[in-house]
Length: 88
Image (cartoon, rainbow, N blue to C red; front, side, top):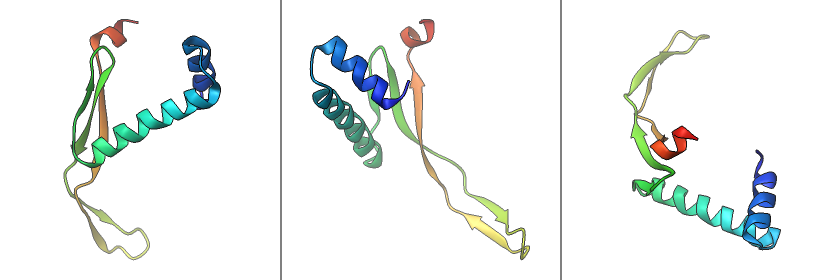
């Protein structure tokens, strides 16, 4: 499902305009992203949990120069779906 299809479905089910549905979706995703940047864990009961996972630092190799490179610990978004969502 694309974002446009999601907006259409939300507008239809919520009996709101497509513009209002689009603004609501953008607001939700912006708020979740801001929370993750701040290091917060966002938990939505019945849907899932969003958090930031810290991976290990690693070394790599430049294929052209064979120079060793160090990659810092990346922070990656992580999500876990709730049991209710898994059953559906």
